Length: 136
Image (cartoon, rainbow, N blue to C red; front, side, top):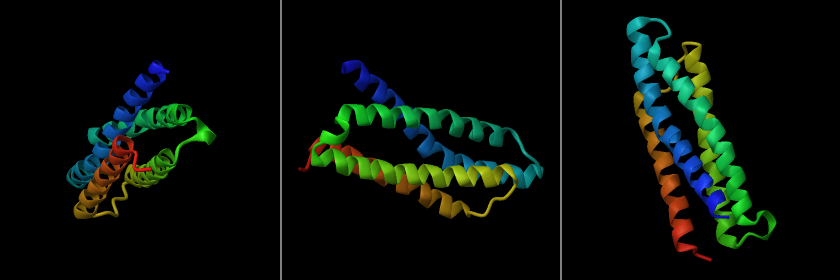
């Protein structure tokens, strides 16, 4: 079980890196696109980071469910799972923005992307609190 925890934590860390970095990278990609009027290296980097971390997120979810005991999970684990699913929703929304950006469509403002980025930080803090405090 120790190795499953190690794999889980490593994958969570990698996935969180993307959750925090990709919305910020979209800001810089948007600026680069406005300057170059074409797909540049920041776009390629952003897409690669998003794709790589998707696999890490899947592994993190699978190992997390394994560690939680799947159906016999304590109540706090269900709360953690709900919060993680909210982060998955955030990640999917980020992916949709990446797909649009790949087509040269940057609809979101820099301010929106900054706030969107900070929302994920609050979600991660909530997950960490639930894991550490185990409120019920």
